[in-house]
Image (cartoon, rainbow, N blue to C red; front, side, top):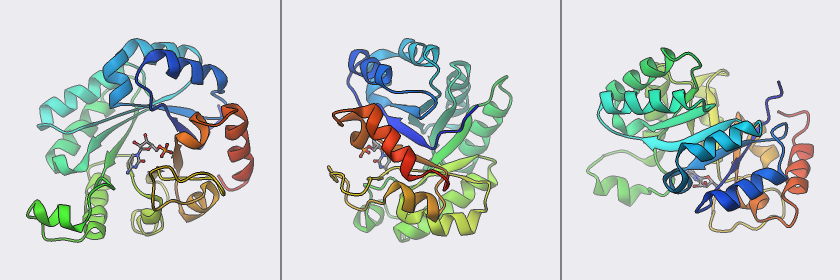
Length: 233
Ligand code: C5P
């Protein structure tokens, strides 16, 4: 089975446009990310339909709750047959360990990764929470905690990839959004990297939305990006 590096973000309000886009792509070339908006609107039936078409799914629901509730949510996600699921590292070590244990007891464990610090949070927001640390210190600390808790990896900005790869070793999975092919529109992203640069910096998987979903020919856009990273990934 191939291991495509691109995870296409299905940021849609409902099943119809999500399935229409999936219909134009190929599971050999990408995986698909289903987040809170789409999953809340459609529920597991959409996942079943996407998986029936051969796609592996990153269920991006960023669980964050008491350890038992988070563990049960991860177990429920695993029972849906998804490839990857995530939690918030800010839920703390006990929550991360409970989630990891729940997933590892499943028949077909998904990859479990953690969000460290949302990239929407800046220094002012962190200080406002009463936390005395820089965003970088928090990312490094929370990523190390995710690794120590047995998780498979973290979501991180491409800008953080190099230092996390050095600190956390070759096997830790780094999933990076904020990716833009050369010459693509930035949309609302500000600190972006090209697919090639992100993989060279140590990313394991690239989350890419609008450069593919809004392209006139999404399949061609996906093929072009895959061509650009051939031999690196
Ligand atoms: O369209 P675009 O490529 O910007 O989409 C990126 C995807 O990655 C979106 O689903 C967005 O919510 C997600 N994401 C992000 N930045 C983060 C975490 C997630 O852009 N820090």
